[in-house]
Image 1 (tube, rainbow, N blue to C red):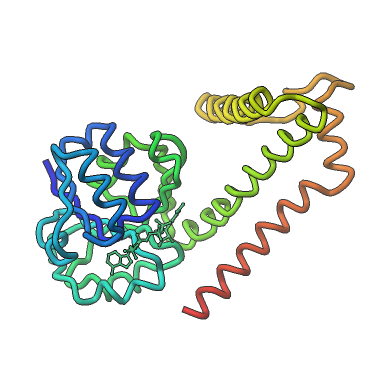
Image 2 (image 1 turned 90 degrees about the horizontal axis):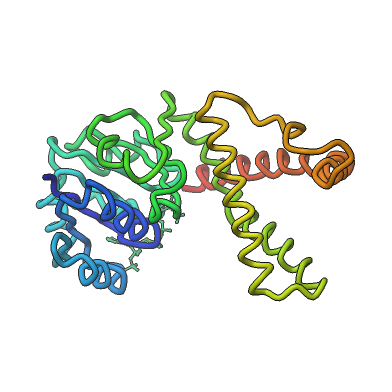
Length: 261
Ligand SMILES: NC(=O)c1ccc[n+]([C@@H]2O[C@H](COP(=O)([O-])OP(=O)(O)OC[C@H]3O[C@@H](n4cnc5c(N)ncnc54)[C@H](OP(=O)(O)O)[C@@H]3O)[C@@H](O)[C@H]2O)c1
């Protein structure tokens, strides 16, 4: 059994803890920062058998074997005063903050892993991007998502640009729902249909990947049918090219943010 310490128990850490608690990682003890008062109190109340809201960040770090950092990137300087130890593993959720910078904040700890879980981790769904490889961290998180471990830190940054597609994907679904509603389909019918449609497609794509074959879109359409019509329209109007451009834009935006920090 290990002691897991959370410094920064915001939206993401909350989802991570709730996901971990549904896996074999429920055998561990969870030490939470007293910050994020509402969330840390709720987590301690929901998991009283193994979760403690500590009196300070210092207490969290002192009691933990693995310290998980979930503050915002701009709050990183708050970490410098904490009593990290050389024997600890540090897992950072901070988007865009390189391992080199983290090492300065958590010295004398040297075993630092950058990780990008996503909100679906609460339901043990979705990718968990991390680097470098670390057996203990992989064992801990193996049950809560699909571990993706690029060898180079720069690849983690590149892959993470795709996480900028989350809210746009929801807007895409909402657009389809709104179209149905404009055709007098009740919200209670349109919404579950569309959410479930996209969920099923995601499962289909994952199954194809696990079976080692690709996802040629033409295999999922009838010549002259609905799907071919939509895809041809999107190709004709440059819709897929816009997706590439959006990723370029988000990459440039991240570079600007990193220069400012
Ligand atoms: N949300 C996502 O989907 C997502 C995905 C990938 C990566 N990330 C990364 O994960 C990190 C957290 O994101 P988030 O969405 O969870 O943000 P968030 O909800 O704003 O959580 C940040 C938390 O840090 C706490 N905090 C601030 N300073 C602190 C300190 N000195 N000691 C202890 N706690 C402190 C805040 O508590 P108070 O409320 O008390 O100020 C807040 O609850 C970010 O670095 C982000 O880049 C997030």
